[in-house]
Amino acid sequence: MRDSRLSLFKENRKLISVFALVVCCVAALIFLYFFPYIDDLSSSKDEFIYVTVSDSGRVRGGFNIFPYHDEKTDALYFFLPGEEKNSHYKINFVGAKSVKINDDVYSYGKELNNNLILNYEDIAGANAKGKELSGNQYSITMKDRSVKSGEIYFLCAGNVDTLYVVSGQNEIDRINEDPSHKLSDGADLTVYGSNNAKKLTSRIEISGHGNSTWSELMTEFPGEDFKRSYNISFGEKKSILGMSASSSYVLTSNYYDESEIKNFIALETARSLDMKNVPECEYANLYVNGQYRGLYLVIQKIKEGNGFLNLESEGYLAKFDYEERVKTEDNVWVEANNKYAKVLFPKKDDPRIKDEITRDIERIDACIKDKSDELTDLVDMESFVQYYLIQEFFENGDADRASQYFYKDGENGKVTAGPIWDIDLSMGHPWFSYDGSEKDAMWIKGLVAKDGWLRELSDNGAFMGEAYTYYKNSFSDAVGYAADKKLPEVADKIGSSWYMDMLRYRNCTDYYDKFDYSGHGTMQYDQSAIVGDVREWILDRKLFLDDYVTNPESYEEERHEPGENTRSIRELIILKKK
Image 1 (spheres, rainbow, N blue to C red):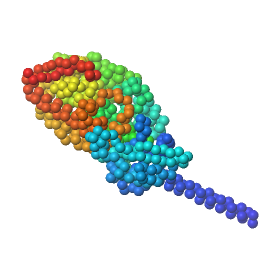
Image 2 (cartoon, rainbow, N blue to C red):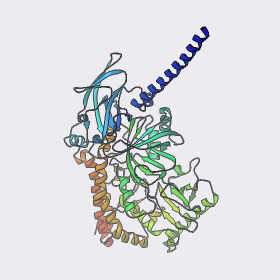
Image 3 (cartoon, rainbow, N blue to C red):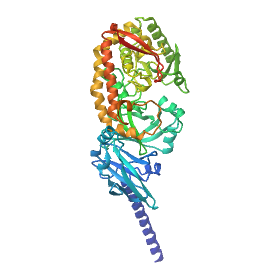
Image 4 (cartoon, helix red, strand yellow):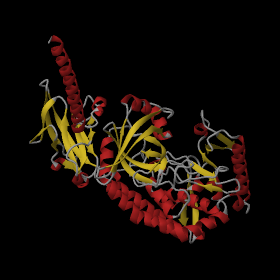
């Protein structure tokens, strides 16, 4: 009898154990279902309030967004992804029973009143009236009976997709503190549409990107916050944000460009001209571990085999840049005629390829200096004309100096100029502005360094004749379309996200001369004024060049040395009517 009871007890104990295990598993599933990405909380343990976001078709689930704490005003900003009308935004919190926002009391998981969300018109209207934004008041009594209160703002991104990256906080911090970009980390990426519906999930490798917009900032402003650019790699080709499939992308911060639109417009102009191998680009809002990092222009990275640039095995891809950037550890590079080029493809240190690149540079240099017709046998002349006009028209500050790519497709191919890249220091950027007179200038001719390919070609009558003809037949219309059609379209699309980005980084280091708000009679931050200024600059530049390339003999040069109010190292050659 005793053995029977013991056997029954053991059997029941097994059943109880199995039942308990099942209950635990179910509880865990329910917990994870109702509280997604709960591991995000561990990286944001100091945040007591957060918002869970999902698309309009989902009642539960989603992903978490944590507030940005403005230490100067002690206000909390929620920069929410997606369009307000197509999203659920639910208030959640830690260590309390409820939170009060204005007159509304929110229990855990209650949907945010959409009347609290500031939109594009609200912010633009406040700027137009010269007023600061009006926030909402919150108060929350924590379980330890302490009370937190203050101003809280809710903004949403509008018609821009979301990149949501989850990684270890320590690893991201290490990447952000690495000026050389040698550190990288595996992370999980989820792409959400503007309706906050999931589009793609993938494992990625993330690392830092940028020279003056990263390394130099860290040196000059140690320990300060700023908007960083990143590289992300999938390990295989994948399409994101509607672009053709690529394995690697650059999340470009556009740090030097308050309009956040100059790189986009230059790339769109190049694309409309059917320039070869123009990388695709699209805007997205970036969140890392639930924290908003800003509005980014996501661009296919310039590398061989990345979906838009496919070179034969005998070809090469190289980039002219500053000597100190090229001659660094792990780089493959060549030096020829005081030019420094980083070899990007092939990646291995191949003496044969290095000799070929050196020989090509020397032969092209000789033909340009001698104004030899043999240049057409060495280079794709149309690509050089197009590349010259992009740099000249938009007045790229890095023209002929940095991030200037060239490639050869095959052993018997010609050297092609491009792909174009990095056009943020342009279009009247304050570093290079001469009170607007630069709109009527020949930009490349004013370069101090006179041995760059574009600078020397600007003194070549035959080349400039081809450039003027191409400008009249194709370029003028392309840049006019970009200013009149593409610029207002994209400005409207990114408007809400643009304001979120400006508010997120308004207290960060002021490394560059910004838009002259007072001079334009407007408040910070006014997208319509900034973008309008870029559009006006493009159209004024076009008006001048339309006449100049048709009647160059009716103009004369007037040379200006770099002024006290500019960081430019070039003289400016302004063209005046005789």
